[in-house]
Length: 170
Ligand code: ADP
Image (tube, rainbow, N blue to C red):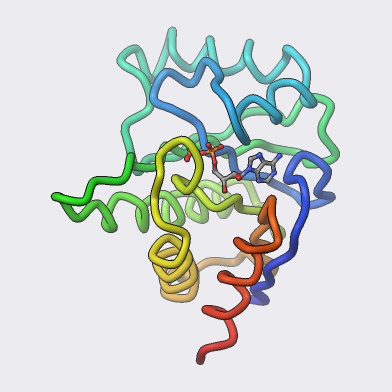
């Protein structure tokens, strides 16, 4: 598996699957979530509503992942995952690691060979970028998957450089 970190907008990635930093409701939000629904069109929201009506009446649990169409995005699928909100009093790293592991498991079930991840939980959910990058890289490396390319797509240069540094470390 090749792992890379680039600066960019995840909605523009030509990969098999892009991962959405969703929330439990699956019904849209700000940040990556807002951009994916805006650029991907209403088909994604419709698919999310169907998931809520069938498999996830109470919403998608933190650390889980589920796929929908990518609508009008260049990717084929959106894999929605729900990161933990950061807490200084409770270690939620296992939940964040689970987002990456479960997203790769879903990617495998779809037959996706290339997957783009945002820095899950580092926006509205306030996870410190350094800690989030370490968890993301370690978990992707530790996960046994048929995915050939994992691309971390970071919105700003500072976040990209933190991910790149963690990737270069060993
Ligand atoms: P969360 O609620 O999990 O924190 P956010 O979407 O608020 O998710 O933020 C996650 C990260 O994604 C942040 O670092 C944010 O800057 C970044 N981000 C926001 N929009 C995009 C985008 N279009 N492409 C890639 N990354 C984005």
